[in-house]
Image 1 (cartoon, rainbow, N blue to C red):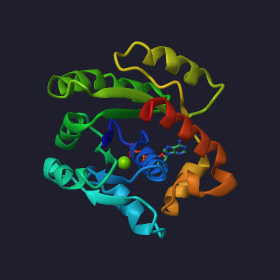
Image 2: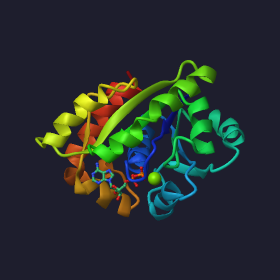
Image 3: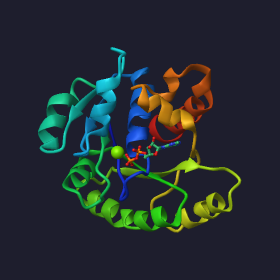
Image 4: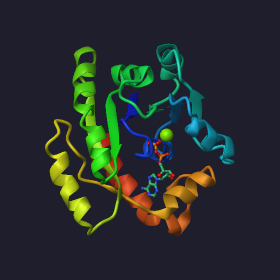
Length: 208
Ligand SMILES: Nc1ncnc2c1ncn2[C@@H]1O[C@H](COP(=O)(O)OP(=O)(O)O)[C@@H](O)[C@H]1O
Ligand SMILES: [Mg+2]
C-alpha cells in the first residue's frame, strides 16, 4: 500500500483539489481512500456531496492518525492524506512520518514560494524517522506563458525538494468538478485536458 500526503505551508495551494482528483484517478486502478487530516474538513465536505458510490471513501483523521491508518491500511491500496495548511501542524508531521510520498502543491507566486521554503526543513526532519519518504513539489494553477511561471521553475530549483516536470494548470474545471462532488476525470470532454495532466502527474510521481 502507498500512503500519499498532500502537504504545504499555505492555504489555497491546491492540497484538497489534488487530494480528491488523485484519489478518484487512482481509485480506478486500485482501491483508494482519503484521510482528511485538515480540521477544515474540505475533503469530507466534497464526499458528502458526491453522489457516485464509486467515489473514494473519506475518513476524518484530524487526530490519532496512527490508529486510523492502522485500521484502514489492509483495506486499501492507496491512502491519500489531505493535510492542514501548515508544516508545523501535528497532522502534517504525523502524515510525513508515515507517508511514502509527500506531494507539495505550490502556486506560481512569490508569497507561495516563500511559504514553501520551510518545507525543506520539515521534510528533512521527517526523513530522520521515515528515511524512505519521497517528496515532490507540484506547480499548481500554472498559467503558461507568464513571466512568473517561468521564474517559478528557476526559483523552485533552489529548494532541496525536486519539482515534478508535470504542472497542473489553472482550469475552471477543477473548481466545477469539486462543486459537484466529482473529479475532473468524471467531467467528460470538458475535463479531458485536466484529466490528461493528472494522469501524466500520476505516471511521473506515483506509479513510476
Ligand atoms: N488547478 C486549479 N485550477 C483552478 N482552480 C484551482 C486549481 N487548484 C485549486 N483551485 C482552486 O483554488 C482554491 C484553493 O484550492 P484548495 O484545493 O482548496 O487548496 P488547499 O486545500 O491547499 O487550501 C479552491 O477554490 C480550488 O477550487
Ligand atoms: Mg484544503
